[in-house]
Length: 116
Figure 1 (spheres, rainbow, N blue to C red):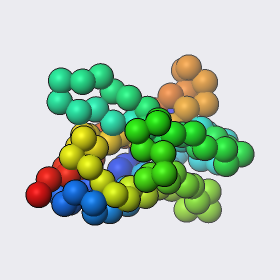
Figure 2 (figure 1 turned 45 degrees about the vertical axis):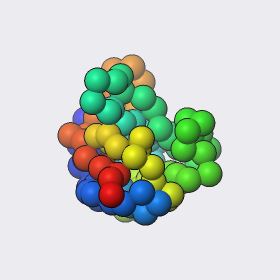
Figure 3 (figure 1 turned 30 degrees about the horizontal axis):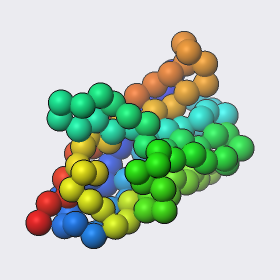
Figure 4 (figure 1 turned 90 degrees about the horizontal axis):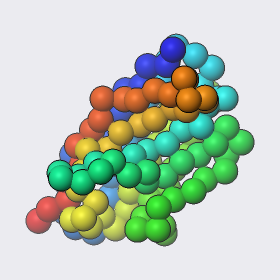
């Protein structure tokens, strides 16, 4: 079992930055693939960024060059650095930990609002 707690969301102006954090507990964090997803009102949840246990990363095209996912296994934490934020980045952002289909865990989400 893995418990995930996100933090760092908030209101930011277009062009601004935020860093989301996701603290994990309850299992061996380092072996999990960690991901950040987001869900905007009226839209399906989408994968934003993922980082494997080996450190490989992948991003949805709309955030490439603006967002960076990283992990600190010593702190059991995954981060999402978000720069040059746009209004279309507004969503609830969720942290995910995945090892197998049965060992797949979600955080409660954190709201990110990009607005002037």
